[in-house]
Structure formats: structure tokens, C-alpha cells
Length: 243
Picture 1 (cartoon, one colour):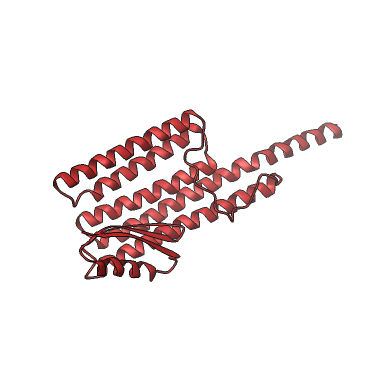
Picture 2: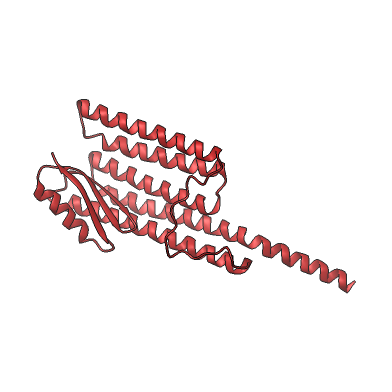
């Protein structure tokens, strides 16, 4: 009887240990998606200080950031071909909506070309998502930061904690980038020389990328200086052009 009880207890313990990583992944996935939603809400609220097409672009940028954060969560914790494909398609559709909004201030042939290019990029991204899923590849996986821990060689309990730490670190980067972008856009709106300009802002791991058109070289430099002044910015890639 004691031998049987010991066997049952050992089997139960093994089952719980084996299930630990899956439980940790579910918890980490929810943490990531909850934080993505909270960050989106914050970024969306910041767009209220703008108006017209600039506000629309701001909202679509917030949606793209959320889609990318959720895609990263799927890649880390729900990486089945079907879910990866859906996550990648959600990003492609969000980026298309953003591109359409960015075309909004243009007119004539310029606007037609802008919309055509946006649609072509969306189709290519959707096809890539479908092809990657059919091949069983992790199409939504973002490149892993160099500082991420290698959890593979750990036992079940340590691995679960390791996975959670890595997930938390990834989310902090996403949140920080979104906050930087939101702050820069808000500062641009406050600046009398830049508030009406067609300036697109994107931040990846602290590196800010500026693109769009402004009337003078002085405004190109002023936008870059403004971006560099925001806390958390490590570098500015200035792609603004004088029209």
C-alpha cells in the first residue's frame, strides 16, 4: 500500500512539474497581452492632443505597436503555425491602415501612388504570413535581444521562471519604445514650426527613425534635435526630406 501511494505521489509530482512551463507560458502570454493593451490605451489617449489626419496617423501607429507587441507574445508562447500566421496578418493589416492614413494628406497622382504602394506591401506581407505558416516556420518571432537568458538547459521550475523573466524584459522594450514615440509626437505638435509638418516617428530599441517631408533644412535639424532631447532615445536616424 505504501509503495502504491509513493508511486501515485511521484507520478502526480512529475505531471505537475511537466506542466509548469506550459502554465508559466500561459501566464506570461497574458501578461504580455495585458501590457500591450495598457500601452495602446496610453498611446491612444496621447493622440487626443492632435487633430485631423495627424490624429488619425497617431491612432494607427498606436494600433501597429499593439499588433506587434501581441505578435511577439504569440511568437514566444503560442507559436503554432495557425496562431503565428494570424498574428503576422494582424500586423500586416495594421501597418496597411497606418500607411493609408499617412497617404491622407497627399493628393492627385502622389496619393494614388502612395495608396498603391501601401496595398502592394500589404499583399506581400499577407502572402509571407501564409507561406511561413504553411511551412511551419515562426513567422512572427522577433529577433531575441542579446541579453535574453538561455532557458533550454534548465530544469522545469527554473525554466518557467526564466521564460517569465525573458518575457518581461521583451515587454519593457516594447513599452519604452511606444512611450518614446508618443512623447516625440506630442513635442512635435507643441512646436510652432513643426506641428503642421508630415513627420512620421518610429522607435525600435531606443533608436528613433524620422521620415516624411518638411519645408526647410532647418526644420529637418530641429526635428532631429527635438527627438534626441527625449529621455530614453539612444540614436536618431533622420530620414526627413525637404520638399
